[in-house]
Structures are given as C-alpha cells and as structure tokens.
Image (cartoon, rainbow, N blue to C red):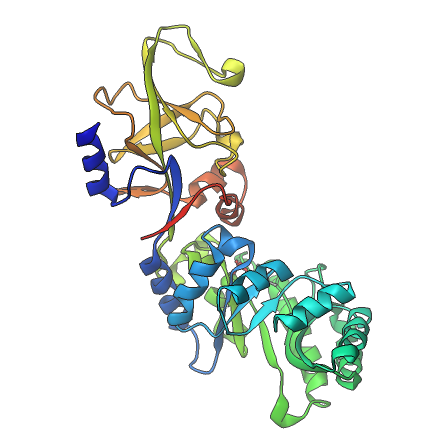
Length: 388
Ligand SMILES: *Cc1c(COP(=O)(O)O)cnc(C)c1O
C-alpha cells in the first residue's frame, strides 16, 4: 500500500483521507471569467451566478476566485445562500433571484445587505412597510416577465410596477431585469420576442426615470451572453459558462471554456466473481465470465445519477472502464478485468480528465436526457471540495 499511496499522491497531489471528492480547478474558473469578459464591452458588468452552491463547485470559494478575476457582483437563489457569502466576508453586491414573502425575510435581506428581487406590487408593499420600522433603505431589482412565465410582473404592466416602486419609501431601484426561456436554442424566434418586449418596457420606463439614476438593466444568462452582444445591456448574469460548460453545442465557437469540476473516488475493494454471479441490487449485471470487479466509494447520495447504472464509463489510469450493476447510495462497482494489477486506494475519475481522455457533464446529461446544470448541482455537500 505504501507504494500505491505515493503513486497516487504523485498523480493528483491529494492525500488518502477522502473516499471521494470534487476537485475544483481555480485556473479554469478564472480562465472562463476572462473568456466571458472578453466578449463584453468594458462598461458591461459581469454578475457571477453562484446559486446552488455555485452549481456544486462551492459558493464561497468560487466567489473568492471570481472576485479577483473581475466580477462585479453575485446572484444567489435564496437568502441563506446570500448570508453564506456575507458571512465569508464577500462584500460585493449580492442579488437574490428568488422571491421573499415574509417580514422576517425582508429583515434578513436588509440586515445582510442583500439586494432582493421584487416580482409583484404586493411584495414591493411588504418590503416598504417592513423597512419602515428600521428606517433603512434597500437597493432592489425588479423582475419583468417577458415570456419565461416564471417570476416577475408581466412586461405589459412593467411601467405601472416601476412607478409604484418609485413612489414607495425605503426602496431604491438598483436594477430591472428579465430572464430568457430559450436562449440556448439555435432558433431565436422566442428569444427575440422576449427581447422586443424587454426593450419596449424599458423605453416606456425611461421616460419616468431620472436620467442620472438609471437602473442597471440586465437580461442575459450564459447562452444569451455567448449568443449576442446586443443582449448584454448593463450587466450579464452568467452561471454555467463560468463553470466551463456550454449551454448548447452551437455556442461552442463563441468562447474557449474549460470545465472546472472533476469528480474522483477511490477503489475500496477488489474481488473476482465467477461466471453467472450477479452484481448489486437487482442483479442488473450478471457476469458472463469470470470477472474482476472493483468497488468504488461513491454513489447516488453523492451525486452520481442512479439512472446511469450499468451504462456509464469511468477513467482509471487514463483508460475507460465500464460501471456494472446498480449504482448504490454510497458505492458503485466496475469491471476491471482489463487492469489486473489495480490496487485498492487507486483513483477513479467519474467526471473530468485523465491523460488525454475526459468525461464531461454533457456526456452524462446526453445519456440521461438531462442538462449539464442538473448534473453539476447534483454534487452536494457530502463530497469535500478540493481546490486545485
Ligand atoms: C440561473 C439563472 C441565471 C444563470 O443561468 P446560466 O444559464 O447558468 O448562465 C441567470 N439568471 C437567472 C434569473 C437565473 O435564474
């Protein structure tokens, strides 16, 4: 085992204490931010979307990495996600994309100096009334629904909404934004329609806003940022691409992105089973011949989708190896018949590269009929995150 441990540490520079972990490549994240920045005009701000623990990469460390790489603020989905960044000492603006409904939430937002999204007149009234007690004012963003049909006030009522908020005490409009439903599609029909609605609403609003206190207008997610500079406005809200994935294949030519996340685990046992022996729950795999199998210490509770059971490949020593049988909560099995000298403790790569081969979140998403966003944020807190 001694030699094997040295071999492993030399190979990836990580000690033996972890059965499975997520590696986050700082250099890749900084590189992706630079790539995205290079698409923006100097006056366009870049907001890093770090909701869902930065898509599984670890919100605090990602926020620290991108702060240094030229990001002007952050977006999170929930108030606790915003508090987590503030507690870690992040001082830049933090937009909460989700809706708040109670006085307690308003007070938490004010206490932690987060910038809430206001989606409805009722919410605006709640915020204004709740802030009366403390006398504080809050910077807020107004969400205009131009066709996503999720949060926000209809573009048709945008003018009334802005007028109402402007008249309420304790609220200052920091931004006005909308969100695309189909920015990752090569067919731009729906995106263009949403853009026309946004532009129309903004034109009406412009007449009632003070020229010198114009709110920050923002519309583009990763896909729209890569697709078209006309959609950048004052700020873009980029999530996925910071983590190195493309929202769609046709956007690959727009920037050179590097995936930042790798998922690795160790072999915890090796055994040989006879022909006819079933493997794992349900015996989905039955050995057709004498087979050497390895047990690996990672499972669906860590974020490996159970639906990939018996059809995924992993990398060991730079070679593809088949996963066999059902993925279980904490372990999965591999057919390692082709690596007779494999040792317990050796490293298995589930996502990421080894040598000149790599497995990407897009490969898993394609196999599952899902999207890379879901794969990345499936890796939750049970796995330690190691910055490389
Ligand atoms: C999640 C989210 C984003 C980021 O989307 P990506 O496709 O990951 O870049 C931007 N804006 C809003 C409102 C979001 O909910």
